[in-house]
Length: 163
Image 1 (cartoon, rainbow, N blue to C red):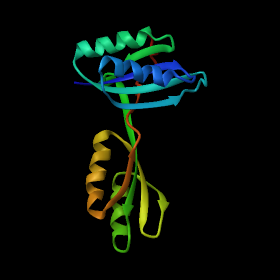
Image 2 (cartoon, rainbow, N blue to C red; image 1 turned 60 degrees about the vertical axis):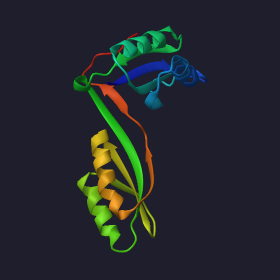
Image 3 (cartoon, rainbow, N blue to C red; image 1 turned 90 degrees about the vertical axis):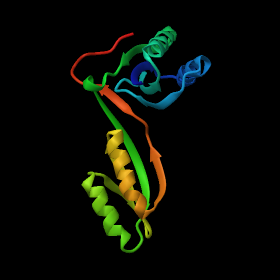
Image 4 (cartoon, rainbow, N blue to C red; image 1 turned 180 degrees about the vertical axis):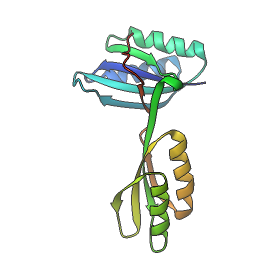
């Protein structure tokens, strides 16, 4: 089973290392990890994606809650959470390919963020499935380079999270 955790932490040096070290010491793999400052510059939000069963999820949450820097933890249920991924995709767009690449990007409401003589860089945001579909359709043109952010998640509604 795949789980998405939203973890609010203090924003200072070493917190990311302490959180990732906790996973490493326990032998848990992190499938995806994104971190960014919140509206409060003293806090950061970590979105952590892990695989396992409910026991592993419970152990991860217990271990995270023991860290002093962890302010709150939320298990993001799919039905109650907005989840997005972002990708930058550099595609071969020489000659006749250019029109096809642009049309494909437009179908997915992706944005062309850089134009080169022989290439385009496309920015796509959405579900993992949407990004994967776009990548599959761009592969025949020739993907030169690909970078993905990993998942970012936020609960729907006005509820707040706590430890």
